[in-house]
Length: 148
Image (cartoon, rainbow, N blue to C red):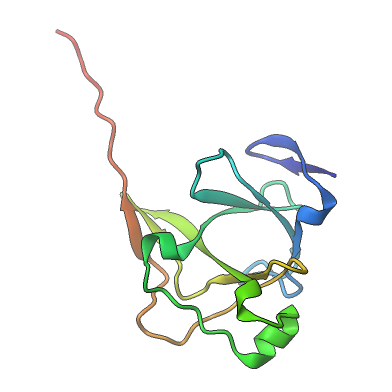
């Protein structure tokens, strides 16, 4: 299948790479079909690209790369909704944003994906340890050199 994106043009992906978020995501409930794009082989950031809207894409990452103690608690009814039989079949991602001079991760609203059936959902965690703007990287401004 070909997926139109505003960042990468038309990208060809296998149909079996489509992730379905039946309830969409917070603020984007009408968009339910996405693909996960990996910009490079060594990347730790991915693009969660909407199939339905070329301009809708989220930068996501595995939160445990940045916060090794991170845990996303999944309730029984959420596991059932995702068709998860085993917790080991779940992959967790968090949305990354640029805030001021840093990259932040939304640890309070992780994305849970069943890797077996490719169904996903965004959950909201009540655990106060996790915030919506956990700094994961500081951006360094590139200085321009002026020759006299």
